[in-house]
Length: 438
Image (cartoon, rainbow, N blue to C red; front, side, top):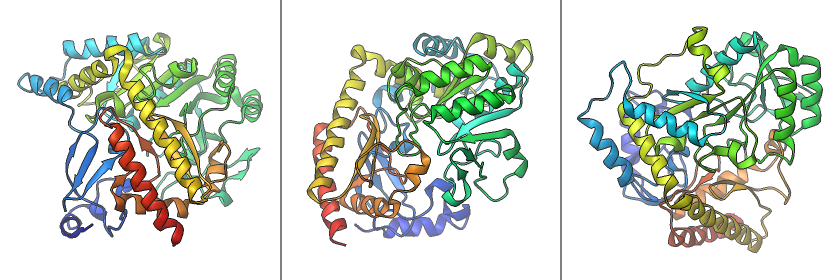
């Protein structure tokens, strides 16, 4: 592969963009490229860079592109609204229709509010939880990501020599410039340890306004909750009068129309959604119980946003859910079947080359890990695996023509086909052969 045009565009962009990018998650080269790539087109399951290299895409914009790139049904709906106008500082019927649809589908959604990103939506959820309980502290879990703002960007990927003992973990800030006071209101625990959670809540539950978690830890190894864990957390938070918030930015509308809460049968008090909800258009949702959500007007808890429920994003959301609902959810059957076939194929390839690989997650979102066979249950176990080996393999995989996220998560879309999966497995075998001989 050649990358001359991406190199030129990066050097040009770096004169005006800090670091040459608009998100720190996009730093660095990938595959054989020494710089962040520039892209010119996405169509279906494929993405093309500025030098004409074509990749089977499992990064999918870090998850939102659930219908594939440039899905006609969504674009047609969006185009049909453009002449209507984009922003009114007021409401539209489309907004009410999408709100009803989400309330019909999501178990915890008695009321919702729209926003533009998961990062801002979690802030509204935390504020409401504090207003509802009269408490200040928030509990989160190591390895769970809830946006990059000071008060929640804590212990996402901390060095293991800074996190303390598992029984008494230390909250770790994640960036220079982060307020040290932000840590004062955050209680951090390892995930998937129900006994420790119960002990801390017995002692400190009266201080904790909200417990926030990814119901599947997609940001760190696609770790599933252990049997009974979510149910236990739900019972304990209810007993303590603490608000349970699921961050379904990734899992929402990806693992099913009802999200992870529907999949596992555990209903939180509030949840946030984004990414797959609008197939690539910026749309987020805060959903929750009426008694909490109505504080936005009965108690004047502040939530705003100029671009909330803009016409284009709402139209995209309606079209996306329509596609995912069609034919009794056949889209999920398709993605799950392909993803599970892909997972099994990767396991077999790793075995053929005598590589230790564990693959975690579901057919629609999963994460291969270079680790001995066995369940990775929490961030501390995840941090101890061979990430350098993973990065080398994914670099070889991208050079072969398959693109995944930089952290190693694979997303499926309805646009992926059996041929895509078979070609991906050919790429993986080629990449594994090179990688194993290095």
